[in-house]
Length: 434
Image (cartoon, rainbow, N blue to C red):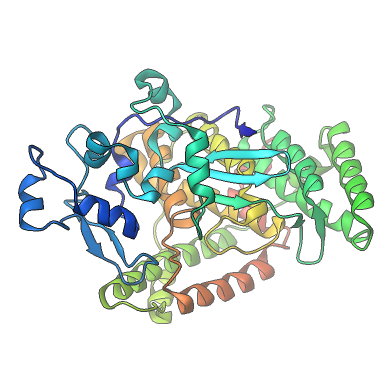
């Protein structure tokens, strides 16, 4: 049984944006062989195919497949002028690469059914009005995509829900207990009476209190733990999260914490991109230069922040919808943030940092693109570079991953437990709302 979100849906509108991303799309051997034998006569690709039967191939030794789809002028060489994949249009969906066929689906196999989530790098997912107006360019079977995703190893497109979920480094709860906790969190974040920023702080308090409450019962059996989680969620909801809100209201942020965390994230991202480019050029693993990290962090720390921000009336609904889908598609339980920090409280802390990053990128883009498009583009950037599609190859940057992971575990464990962390990351103003 497939489970679908009430807030998010998908259909291909042939916008072609996913084919113009800067990511390297792995080219599997079967697709490579099939495309090499195709007849491109009468198409715009005929001349390329005559001079080089593998005109669509780009060597990528650090990818598990060893090859990627070649790009030209910022787009996949197979992208047609109509916004559709030429191979798909001429020869059907199976002619495309397996990753192309799976995007933007994110399946999670759970006892209660298969959660069918989507990547917000896909424009129709971010813009439901455009999807409704344009309709689907291609009809596809969700079941067939799911079957293929299930057989595709090492992929974010198919994962299995764990039997137990780490709430904190010392507390684990059964999967159905997690679902109860998640239901309460989603309800909390979707309340209309307060701003999204405040609810994000309250969500941090909600999970922290749950961890403190369940710490006392962590050694009990599954049924007892399940009952304790149910009791906690029911109690919080019966008081309309009043206790959580009161604690969140008393929080006082420190802008230095926000600036520091943001500058480290942006510095690490910048130095990671440099390391990845060097790795791609020479092959083998990539190492993040500590000098590049330090230089990037310092530069971003003293960077003048944009004074142009989308209004909260535009920004908050779009970001709130995105965050609720990240949680619904089991992003907290499975650890789908870039650094896979482990544990709901750590992953939720990453969600708060993503909020600050969204504000940062939306502010930089708002003057040129307008509020709605700037927010949409900020979501795409954060989803691509910090959440799902950050270039974590099966073969590649072992040192880079380990270095980043150790840095962020230290950063999170030193800051996440602080009462100033959540208010600082989502902004001071939210704490003054009543």
